[in-house]
Image (cartoon, rainbow, N blue to C red; front, side, top):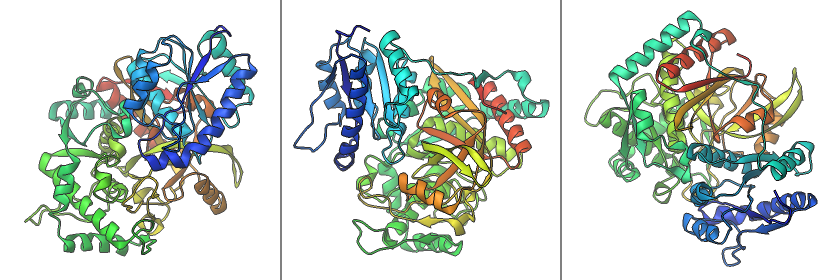
Length: 535
């Protein structure tokens, strides 16, 4: 890359004005550090778009704005996408797909400002679109890892990350029993087929979370495209008495809610009762259309009509949950089992969750599974732990069965007003220690791919957990995870989504058995399977 050629820098943001305004100071501080690092190498940086003083931020905040910005950036210019915050990938994806110059995505290593989450989503979207890019991350953009990677990009237009922890799955890898079960379950799915209920696609511009029909159908899964307006309409048919019974059931199980009086800033009982109506409505619609799993977008559209769907999602993903009966009937819907829900309509997580549900149920393991954001992490030493411990968090979908104490260990807190104007309760808890199988379905090279490995959920001292909550989002459920023989940078360089799917495996032997059965099933469904880390 010639030093005479300027490097352009852009910053993609949220669609919501309040989020962009609140996060702008952190983004601006990060950009100063990134620009300084590039200029120390002798290159000139031009910011590709100005700050909008009237709006109070300098983010690209819509697809319309993104198209205008890219019209003024030379098509062959080296381009840095600097992310300190959550971003809507579709705001800039159009420009990156058609851009001819080298692309580098960069994030701040911070839990407080979720640039890591935003960058991972953008990386997954670029991978799906077949766009060549490089990626880096850093706390202060002066460490050896970042500087070395930046110099490689400036010199060769690319950064390579080690992938020695990844190996292709071979059918001979799976023990005979696991392989046989995986193939059997795949044959059943391909023969009988299943329906994935999608309440509006493309949540927050997550292009990577949409599986094209022509890739999904060969797995035996077909979409039922539903509208969030239909979900809201169905909520209006649920009686106050039914909502109250559902709420009472949750409280009787031991869950606590932190209520206040101001609807604008506090969680109220009325918000939770509305969520109970959404829970009932979602199950009835899923039953009506024969869905084996559902995903509610919520973030757009429904957010202006109802409280958040997060409590709903966690309840749906739990085997032990409030009973819901078909209208004018005594028949309980999906009795004794979860209705797998994929947060933010992430269809890759939806397919993963459906497969997990079938494999774990066949093995007699608890079938509860969920996605989390790969939010952040740091090394922890003490209490028998000396390892890098990740923070996995998601606003919704985490089932109480994953928590220490179950429902009795769960707390409902109001979603942050910055993102969720009408509030709604989260389903907050600390994930119990034990082995997990983690995974991700994604699209690369025009094909469905599947990465999977073994992890260990560890229990940290309460003060460390509280500190990690303080540094991230304290209202959300948290999972402390050690990944087996996978470093921080290996995971970041490989993973093609902000989301990661997790399910408990009982003991380590059971987790391995489940992983191989699931890998064999995914392989038989036509996915390209990769094993990551020590199995």
